[in-house]
Image (cartoon, rainbow, N blue to C red; front, side, top):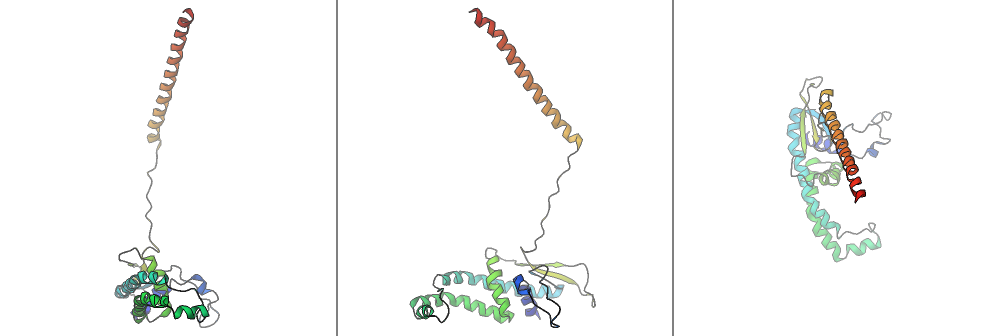
Length: 216
């Protein structure tokens, strides 16, 4: 039950194109993509139990990232079973790729032993782990819902990845009233008056000096 719930959380990160032309068992009802990827709604106790399992899988995938980067330096772009691929397979470069890829493959097998879902493991290593590469821990959060579950009145909660549906706190702006704007207008008026007074004084001084220069 817990591994299915953990896999369901990873599978919500599927590409939206996956749901194109996807029908339910009746063959008529289309399957809609999740409204909020990276989130599942379950009971509070299940969320608390499955959270360590999800965190462990992400930690395993994160430890494999350096080995995947190292193996990328030795891999080939040739198609499988082609002549170029066979030459690479028999070369020393493949030996180096195999040695670099072994820890990442081991981590992928451990993750599959926990989840038992190949698609969930692929999403974990390709999308989730690189997203949290710089985060030291705390990849998920649990939020308790106010409304109980219908039927058995179970306490519901949301289990989701952090950084995906974060709540942004808006800073309220203080309103400006006329009484606060009045002093600013008075200050601007005083500054204009002082500028005009200085200009008039300079003009008078130039007028008084001019006749003296003419007499000389």
